[in-house]
Image (cartoon, rainbow, N blue to C red; front, side, top):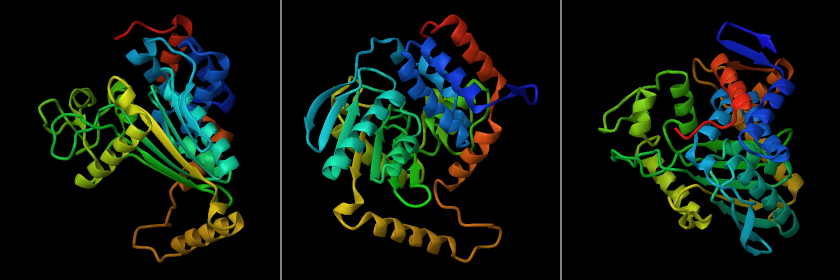
Length: 338
């Protein structure tokens, strides 16, 4: 461990992974499952998303859902090309990972797979799952129907989730990954700002009275806004409907469900041709003349891959408060429900 500024601490990859596994085990997960969850948050940190990094483990233990009984993930309904899973109230960074594994196995065998999972929550970065699928040589579409934090366009109360949608396409040297929330600000980042007493950007949230706010605590009592007004609202609604396909109707809050549509490119054309044509498309886009003030045209996922490569060598930097809170979790176990 290397200390930075007084309020920042640098950890090597192995130090961060060890801290993460021990903290997740303290939250009640078996070591093998804890490693899956810790690898997820560590990869988020490596890719430059500190708010989805090790701090996310604290969000797990802060959630009242983490105190409810957990059961093994099980199949509710299955066909050769599809499966619906009950996540057993396990955190989504474990449940959705298992669903992604099932999607890869079925798509490799049958060419296409449709997988849904519900009764799981807090799935983390959708890019983590679709990249895994893209590296298996498959095309992925992943939708999230999350807990209600986002107001519909014109509404003053939350009625939708942040509801990300993500895609992955196998190409060289890395999959093309596109991952975007349908909200103007992500719920995990809001909780991170609240934990560190930081203000929100302008125009992303409203308070309980429907008035604009930059205070994260007031926003938690109010709502996050959809990005792009009615356009983000429309996409968020589509993700909620896909969530119904994933079994959200079977959960008490009718939320927190996840779907994967995964396919082999050779259903339509040879995989080598697909990879080459996608590569040519990306090269053509990056060769576009630049507007003044721009140094490059950056393709989605390009920055994350660069950050990951650098941080694997240099380690990650986390806030001292997050570091101390994780060690307190390891010492004391899960705190009472707030």
